Image 1: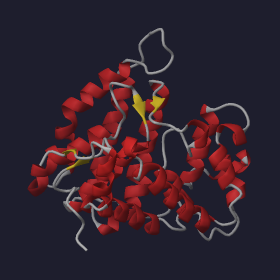
Image 2 (image 1 turned 90 degrees about the vertical axis):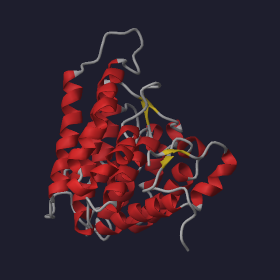
Image 3 (image 1 turned 30 degrees about the horizontal axis):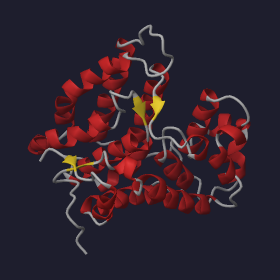
Length: 299
């Protein structure tokens, strides 16, 4: 079934929160959150054939950025070359997803490809935000639901696939000067991402020396960012923004005062539900099909 929007008015939000899609999505996020607890990006984990194929797919998207340089235009933000890049994905998405799927599951490609297309930003507004990031998590969740990805792929899903996705998204954001979608400016956690802060804080749980107060120290970030997703995010913010950290990233600055990583992790999960999953402007764009269904969750 080709996924379509189901949440068109604020009162529909109850339907979303009661849906099987919501239960599956949040379950997926939390399962991965448990899976990465206390582990480094550089630790050993299994890399399946599907994961390798997903890395190839993301490599293709990356290569297309190189082949589509930004154009000269009067406005600094939202470079129109992004639309050319996006049109290529729009055209090729189904074929790209087909290759990732096992032969007996290829019929699911049109449904799953929708989430891939939704995960790279909006080509009309040339913006990117947590709703697009959620579409990529939904894409991965669908691959798990059809059995292309399995339980023992958990670490590779976050540390290899999702991490590579973030690299490509940062490159898109930088190259085409994408606008933050529905960003809360200085009051949001980050202009573009949320999930790597959740999973990244879980990686730090029970760390012998690094505490939340350390991530605002640039020396710590430079030394440890290859091992921790959270620090990769901070490093990117420091590259993209000028001025005091407490001013441009006030929410993160506040989080650095929380005593333990497990408290940070729990707080971010609560915040993600409230700020992303329960916000109509984000969820109105979410699409529902047979894999992520709007039907009420089974009790």
